[in-house]
Figure 1 (cartoon, rainbow, N blue to C red):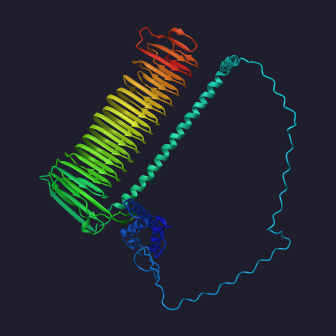
Figure 2 (figure 1 turned 90 degrees about the horizontal axis):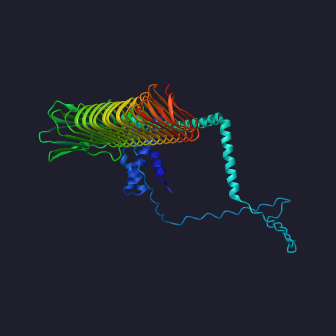
Figure 3 (figure 1 turned 180 degrees about the vertical axis):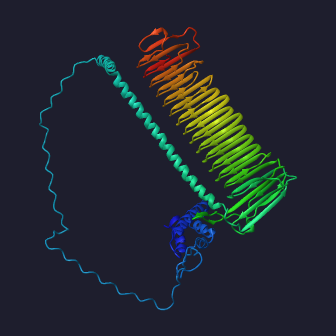
Length: 609
């Protein structure tokens, strides 16, 4: 049975077999094969039979010979011209006249003589009979095992438990330093393995993103035509006197949007093919001026080989009057660039391209890209929303009334950003990196990446969360900070927050220059520097050490408890309880905060000297 790929290969061989085999022709053949496969899949999905779909896709593609000629690939001598369409040779008609004579039968080959001394293969040597088993019916009976005396199993189990507990306790007392070293080494190894796993995953993600970016960049270069002259240019000029909104709907056409001082909207369409059917057509209904692209190839083939662009290309340039204050909506499957626009609500949507915005001052700005990056530079707007399924989002020098950014598989970066009210940034599988940010409230969410926030001032609350990443926060000032990660370390630096909650399920927490807060980890150490203790400090870990450093002048009450470790209590303490694993008390005459530390399997050290 002929498969789709075999059929495509056969069709391409009929064309490429007529030309010299060069690096350029091989690369072109691979690209065309991929294009035909995608086109056939689309036709199959629409209901075509596979063989018919391949034939139709091949016919729709156009002249491969023209592409080879553009690359300068030489035709072999005496090769026929023109794409050879796939045909099925007709059956030969029956010839009239006497029947064709039948050739005499071929004589049978002589029998091969047997080798001398070889055994007769038709006779199989006999297999000896299995002897009968002896009769064991008269064997003497096996004596029964003696019955075991009654034993108190519960008493034995209890005695063994007590003995084991005493042995463990004796071993801990005798080998406490060794056990601590072993435990710390195991923790370090586990942390190193987790860090290596996160680094490996991040490296793989970055490699995949870099490969996708390179491929997209190559496709972008193939689509653009900076050095090529268009075969066709269509210019549309429209008065906007009765227009309240503009809607531009294009296919896989790169679009550049600029402002103009002229009073009319000007759209320039450039194509690499001279076909009037490519021109866009438009109408005006209820104040909305809508332009829709013209005919496009069924499957737009674009390729760049050695700096030479092959296939269909287009470029759309839109000049919007600065006096127009209606809404502008632009849709394409390629890149969109917008710069210098003022005063109009703007919505840009692309399926497979990047969106770049520069020097915008607009009431609202909404961006959507399926597989591309989105970048904002020097933008002022009321409400800013941007989402991408597989691209990065980047902001620099942005002011907005509200901000909402979402990407499924990309990073989000922001610098010099001011948001008057709420800012929400979410990525499912990427990192969040923010620097110099001011906002009314801030929500940072990463499903599988790190979160880094530096130089932030937020009047309301900050939430920073990751399922499998590290959190690096500060310096920052906020009314309340909640930082949570399921599998990673948390680092806080110079965080001023009257309400502070930090939690990780598997990682260490390090905090410097905090004034209090709640710190919890299921499996990790806590190292906290609260030189200015103004709020209560609560530190809990199930399997780790806790170290807290306070100012010598700090005055506080404390409650310290460890299930299996040592306690170094603060200097100058007055104890209300003083046991090996529990110490409560007070430091200073007028406590201003309470210090509570708990660890199930670790040491506690409070330093205030």
